[in-house]
Length: 303
Length: 255
Image (cartoon, rainbow over all chains, first blue to last red; front, top):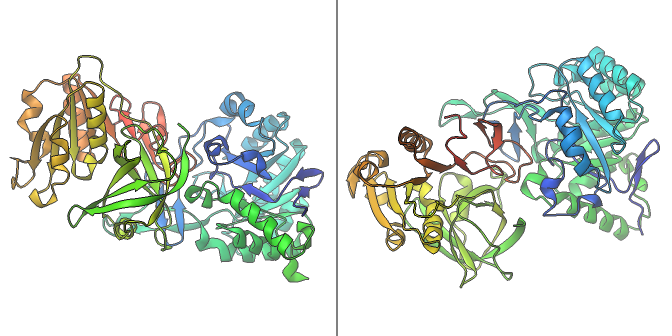
C-alpha cells in the first residue's frame, strides 16, 4: 500500500487531492457522481459575513483551454452556512475547509472567529486573491502590507489551521508566500485565477458583465506550476498547488514541482469525477514507479 | 432522480437542414426517468476551444427503444463538432439535469409556444401532456420555411399553428402576432425560444392572468449548481438556471 497522506502541522489529510473553492459547491452537488468522503478534503464555496448576490449575468466566458469567470462570491453568508450547510456537510468523512472573504480586515476576523467555533471545520482558506469583487479580495493579495496585515489579524483570532490562498497577479509571488508564512500561515495555496478579459466580437462588447474576470483551466497550468515551484523552494510550510489540473499527469506535475497537495478546480465542471479519477491515477503511478510514500515525489525535480 | 455521467451510443445523427440535427442516443443500461424541460450536459471532444460541456434539452424519448433524442442547433465550434458524429460513435453526457415543466390542472387547456431551436423541449412536453390526457395547442415560429424543423412530429399531438417571419409558410410575422394567441382559449402556456420572444409571450400572459412557464437557455459552466455562472435574476435573488431551472414560472423572473 502506498502512503498517500499529507499533513498541515498536526492536521492529517488522507490523501493530497482536495477540491478548489467555488468549483465544488458544498460537496453535495457531487454526491450523485462520487463518494466525496474519499477525497483528502474539500474547500467549500467562498463565504462572506453577509449574503452576496454576486455579479450580473453574464459571469462566464469560455476561452481556449479555460474559462473566465466573474461570479463575485455569490453566497448566502455565514449565518446561513452555519445553520443550513454546516450540519449537512460535517457528516463527510474528510476535511471540510471554508474559504473566507471580506471587504475589510474586520470582516475576515469576524468570519474566522465564527468558524473557529465550528468543531468539524479544521481549517480555513483565507482568500486574499478573488479578482471579481470591488472591495477586498485581490486587493489584499496584491499588496504585501495588506497581505501581512490580514494574515496577522486572522492568525490572532483563529487557532486552527490557516491556509492563505495567493494571487498570481503579482510580480513576485514568493515575497507574498514568505510574508504570510512569517505572519503565521500554516500553508499556502496557489494560484487563484489570473486576471483576464474577453471580448464578444459578434456583439462587439465585453464577454463579461464586469469586463474583466478570473481565468482558470489548463490555460493557466504552466504559470501555476512555475509559481508553485518557486514558492515551494522558498517556504517551509506545505504548498497546495492549484491551476488547470484536469488529470493525473497534471496533478503529478504540481507534486513533482514541490506541492504537498493539489486542488482540482475547473475540471470538476467538465468531469464531476475528475478529482477521484486523478486520485486513483496518482496511486497507480506511485505503485508502478515503486514509491511507497507520496512524500518521496514531492519536489522530486529539485532532488 | 440521480444524475448520471455516461457514454451513450449514437443510434442516429439526422440532419434536419443546414442548421439543425438530432442525435438519438441509447445505452446498455435503462435510460433513467426524464421529464420534459430537463437537459443533458454534452461533452465536445477534441478541441481546447470547446472546453466546457454544452447544455442541450431532451427533445424526445422512446421508452420502447430505450432511447432519447437531442435537438441541436449548429451555433458555434462545439455544436459543429457534435454535428459530425456518426452512428455508432459515443457521446459522453451528464443527465438528466434541471427541473421540468409542471402539468396543467385537470380540465385546463395547455398551449405550447416554441421559436426556432426553442421547440427542442416542447416535443417531449407535448407527448407528456398527451400521456396525461391533455391536448395542447401548439404554436411554432421560425424565420422562414427553410428553417422549419420537426413540424410533422407535432401534428399528432395537438392542434398545430405555424408562423414564419417572412410568411414563406404559415402565418406571416412573429409567433406572438399569431391570431390563435388571441382567439383561442388556453389556461397554461409553456414557452421556449429566443429571449425577446419569451419576454413577449410572458408579458401577454401576465396581462391576461395566464400561468406561463419559460425554459431559459443561459450560458452554463457545470450544469449541476457548482459554478454559479448561469444565474438569472429572480424574486428570490440570483438563481442557477441549471438547478433551479431551466424552467421558471414567469412570476419568479424579474423581466
